[in-house]
Length: 316
Image (cartoon, rainbow, N blue to C red; front, side, top):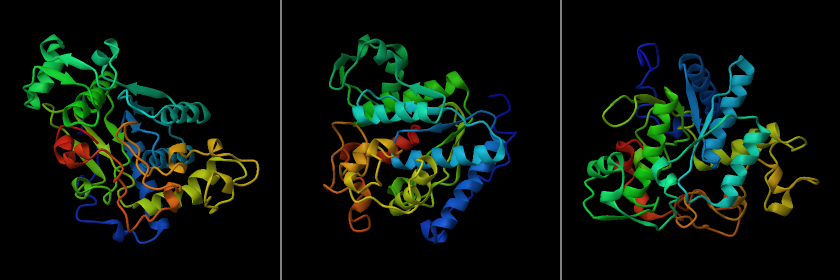
């Protein structure tokens, strides 16, 4: 986008050396999220919200919608990355709430593999792939003659998620991306700032990442859901009511009526690919031991262990 980022007046150092402890109450955390969101909606000319259908990005989207409504802004488009390995329940959830909230949905996918009808586990001869894909593989120093497509590997994650996002950034010219990153989620994210520059044009289309919920931990996210997100979006839902199961919902409501992915009711705490995610308990995510166990222990570890390298390439 022309003159980016000269037209912005954001502090790229804001949040440096901070942790969730610097925002001790849920009110403090929500207030900060709203403040950052209002500034971003005012300053960025063409923002978008990265939405996976998971709890963190849904909280980010909720705050964006509320701040936009209160201040007369348009709600930005939501970008959903289709890596071909989603739980069917997740894609159905996204489609349902796109309609319910009247959102503009942008689906980002690697168009080459989409044209090829690629499915998880398919094997491709590298020399038969496009020059653009071969250049991306060269960036990763990938030297094998064939490639097995898997979004949970370093190479697959880059091709199916990062490349797909970068292509979408180029096509739509988004200058700021709201993202549901949290300081406590992974070591590689602990040093993130609220406004995070991605200005190296050799790596990605120049843009900023807007991290409005860095100051939340997992428990805070769920508390925000039951205090604000669900009551504000589901008629008749009592603020603060925390269901212990699907059967614990207020009379007349089902889990499908809530902007909460059904996989969380099944015991998943972190949603990734269908093959690379596992439930960590039989209880709903918010009823589990959030402090004494690891949030992403059910996720494919290959990707978790290389997150720093992925983020340097443009991943979330």
